[in-house]
Image (cartoon, rainbow, N blue to C red):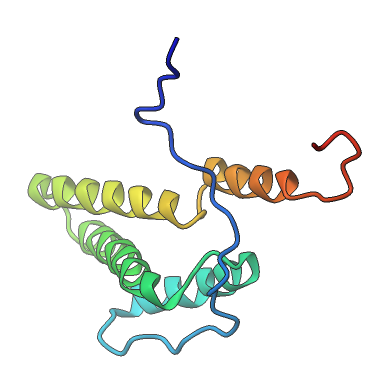
Length: 128
């Protein structure tokens, strides 16, 4: 009997090449995106899950969050909601959610990190 693993994400684990210091905020990001960068980067550094190679994905996550918040600001400033902007905002939020899961920024993905770290316990007397 084979084990079905399609769609199952591997557990996140601390990376050997993880960044130890947060890089500066990219200048091209919007104000909302810069705020998000400053909010999440300390968490990613502390969990040791982000490397230099991952920075483009984190930038994309922050840009998507920034765009969704900018659209929200635009929609609340108007009198009638713009359905096209609403659809665009939903797409940005979906993209941001998917990217957040990649980097351990959702409760489920954080649980995967905790489980992977608990499995590395060398003090387990039952470990073979």
